[in-house]
Image (cartoon, rainbow, N blue to C red; front, side, top):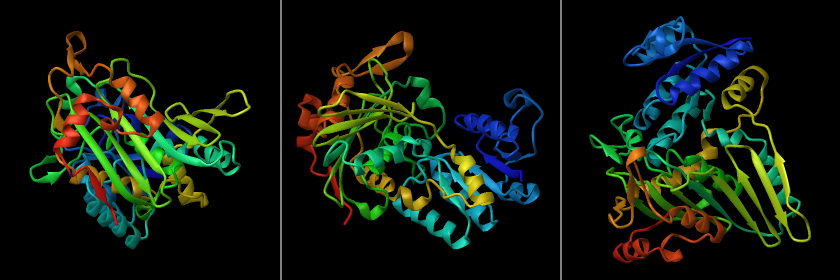
Amino acid sequence: MTVPVVLAGARGHGRWHIANIRRLQDRGLVRLAGICEPTPLTEEEYGGALPPQSADFGALLDSTGARVAVICTPIPTHTDLALTAARAGVHILLEKPPAPSYAEFRRMADGVAEAGVACQIGFQSLGSHAVPAIHRLVAEGAIGEVAGVGGAGAWARDEAYYRRAPWAGRRRMNGVDVIDGALTNPLAHAVATALVLGGATRAEDVTAVETELWRANAIEADDTSCLRVTTAEGRPVTVAATLCAERPDEPYVLVHGSRGRITFWYKQDRVLLQRADHGPEEYDYGRTDLLQNLVEHLTAGAELLVPPDATGAFMRVVEAIRLAPDPAPLPESVWRPIPGERRRVVPGIDGLVAAAADTLALYSELGAPWACEEARRTDRKEVSTR
């Protein structure tokens, strides 16, 4: 049975969703029934004959008979659009982060549950077959007792990235939370994946969050930051990220054990197992697409991979970042521009990001001078979730 799908937000990252919907459409699983955009797409943008378009999301859902809505719109709009779909009886694939605050997340999740529709949160890395494989390795004792989980993301974003939309790089806009920082949006997968591998999925699995947030760019949100989550089991989950890397590389999550460790490059679905008395073992895994999983949930009863409550721990982290002091600007002596690439880099940050994931320490604990100074100036870096 072909499932009619409406896409809200077809520009920017929405282009990826168009390509993915077309891929599934070619397999006869879905049909793109409509596109919701304030300014309609042109045929040139879309690359062919367009489906029906409307700026009125609710009306488009009604007129197309959509069964699934893919929502890839600005972060502050997620909750209201998801609830519009839910009230219409339409199932949802909601882009990450699901909401800019824990209160908005609960309003969305509770409303969706009350409406009785399925909702999948778009953390594509959690569709990787490597995730259950790593859980099995840990359960079998391959690396001994788990001591903690680290995450590392050293990426680069140029000045145009922060001009991609009015809300880009903002913490708030017109009095509304946005929280578009490195840890909550571009490298949110590192945070979410590290939490899942650390056994923290639900909100109650998080007991405290420490944050260190900085910015080299002229933005409100963080572009160079780290955090450490204390889980209910007492294991630390530390994630370090930057959008100002000298040499951008693949992000990864690192599970530390008493007799070894597991490295997961989540964008590549690649796993490296290193353990005592064994040579290194590398594995490549497949991945289940989250829209396909949602469709198969509706048509064949497949288990939903990323329902809202499975991202409660991630949303506790978002809330801690929202409540933290605004990211401190890095001194000009700490970063330098790369004119040809129109971006800023923080020399040495690549190594700091890797060291944080390797040692589960924060930047200030690793001795970064700018981090140590800021840590002394603020006493609000830890947020309890009890």
